[in-house]
Structure formats: structure tokens, C-alpha cells
Image (cartoon, helix red, strand yellow):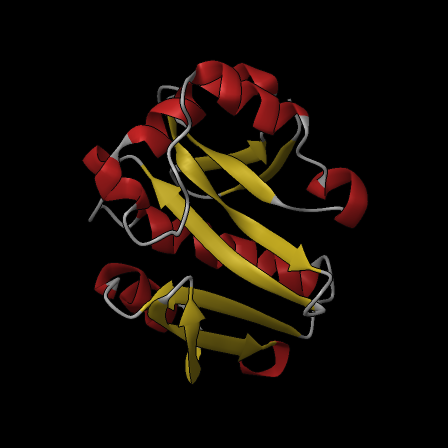
Length: 172
């Protein structure tokens, strides 16, 4: 298990194939994936195949990370950075079990990821994308210090892009 980051309450580590069932459970909840553009996994085996084929760590040196509760080692969701070669940019993303919403986990884990991205990976800019209706995620991006850039087509829905540059980091 490769731990990447630690916060007061959380450990962020690389996703492993042992996370397949939790990953499946997370993505099968329609409320969790409502604003993601993703389809739910058909079963845990499909989640396992996704994790087996996840190449971001190897190709980019970073990716989405499992978020683990330090107090009891519970898998809470994921958070992390993702490089998009076609856009030559890195985005911040997060997804948590519904039972963990409104507890500050997205903000806490994403703030650690932003700091890591700027301080360790030497990224110059990080973006965040959300469907316009996803008010909770937009609020997290704003709390993190990201500023509105523009609207875009998010899989046929109105979307927004926020961004932050290394020189303007503020929350941490």
C-alpha cells in the first residue's frame, strides 16, 4: 500500500485491486454519480477490471487516490489529480460515499492534493470541472480557492470549469 498524503483525519493512498468492491459500491449509488457523466459499474468484477487497467500512476506519476479514515481504515471514497494529455492539464476530482457528504472530507482531501500538486509535482495550474447543477462540488472548488474560468459542455449538460494557479494558492 503506497500512502501518498496524510491529513488530520485521512490517509490518501494509491488505489489497489483490493478496493474493487468499495469502488463498485461507491459508483453504484445514483446520487453519487448523478453529476459525473459516469455509468455505474455492472458488478464488482467490472470495478476490478477498471482498477487493474488504471495506468495514471505509471504514466503520469499521480492520479486518483483512495481516501481512508485514519481512525478505522474505512474506505471513504477517492480524491486526487488527473492529467489529461489531450488538454495538457491536470484536474482535481473527488467522490465520496453519500453517508460521508457534508463532513468536510472533500475539502480536506482536495486541499492536500492541491498542495501536493503544486509543491511536489510542481504543477503551475490545476482545474476543477463540475456540472452546473452540482452545487456541493462547486462550493468545494470555491473553498479551495479555485476561480470560475468558463462554461463548457459536460456530456450534454451545462458545465463549469474553475482553476487555480500555483501563485494564487490560498487555503493551505
